[in-house]
Image 1 (tube, helix red, strand yellow):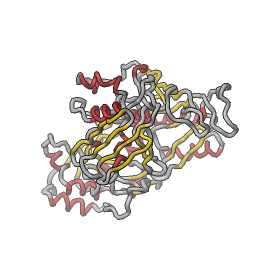
Image 2 (spheres, helix red, strand yellow):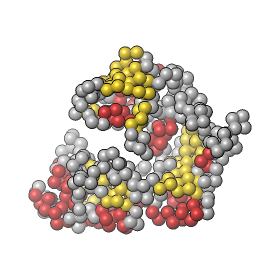
Image 3 (cartoon, helix red, strand yellow):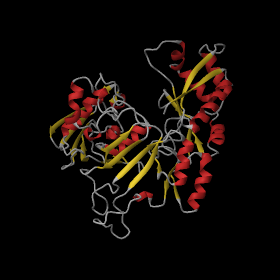
Image 4 (tube, helix red, strand yellow):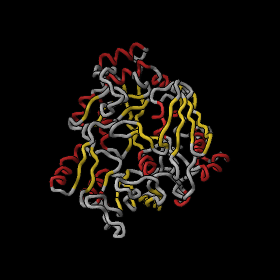
Length: 438
């Protein structure tokens, strides 16, 4: 693909919804704290929110694993220097309250907010930022953030001239600038530096870690972990942000993340009020009618978020240390283009998403108002052209077969995978669908 040859995305969901019970669940099911009565019409303090997650993370360390469940947990318990507002797509100050940019657009001097502490009470300083970069680039840990924090293959440097200042230097001009740091969750140096120094960072904050020893800068802390069942988060008493009423955030006292791998059971528990929020999943097209009836009865809130920022996608394995025939195919631009031309995105949108989807050919969906462009190359359904591309690289008469890994618990993606399998079969490509755990 034009933007990123390793990936193409087939469908962007148009009916992406977050479903929330309206029966007091947004403010929790417990009564508000009578010692802190809310202002008229203002938010209510206290209560517990019960939400579902499809799986539990394999670790509490976002630097060594990327998964939907871990992303939910990290967003609730950690914080970044800057953040991208998902509603406006604008870069906003977060742990850094302001910054200046050099004339060559490669050096940024960030002023950190004062008076911030981690959830264990230890003050947050620029040393934690420098440490976080060091952890992200640690070769022994083989972390998941390294590649995303490089420009032209070179790392970003971070220095700390004083406890409240960080200087970020990019190795080359980079248009997004500090937007790159929206995914760098700042770690507590005092808690994790020994593990990094000893080469054990990839094992740090594993699931057996006592929750009290995991410190963060987010609104909640991990209070309890029952493997395979739930994660309980408690309000961070040291959280640095305040609400519009001037009261410290968050308003909720607890969040319970219940592990629910089965989508049918998840929707049923939402309908019956056993959970308040589906935290990870868009509403499936086949569930929308029933949930809409509950909304009309006043027992459920459905928020239409418009075209999603993410979409079902195919990732080609481009590992350079693999030189078998399949990996050599994947590295050929013509092969990837052939696969893309073979897909009937309109058919997938209509059959799987019941028409509530936007066919796209590139890595950016129309929901991303800043970066989406109608002028990006399109890959219309064209099996004849797909076959010609395969023939052009000597694969016209070669048996082609590869595996497609798909989350076993995500029924919508399973159906998309089945249609992809059938469509690629039309150009002589056999696909084996391999279910995998979330």
